[in-house]
Length: 106
Image (cartoon, rainbow, N blue to C red):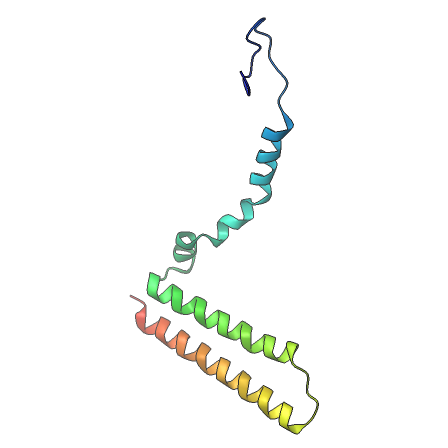
């Protein structure tokens, strides 16, 4: 039998295949992703579902505001003003999401 732990003829134990241990290694390597499970995040932050979603949207908007400054470079005054306007828009969106999260908290 494929994958059997013992030989079907003599009953001796068979060697463990690398594919089984490779699957086990992948499971161990990805164990840290359990932190990103939604219900665990809800318990850790002690927030309701709607409040947690608002918090994550606000965190994404903050990340977008930071990335605007990293991605775009300033060539002249008009570029500087445009970049600052984009940052302000992202920060206002983050503020609105955080306020919604506070209002939706139980």
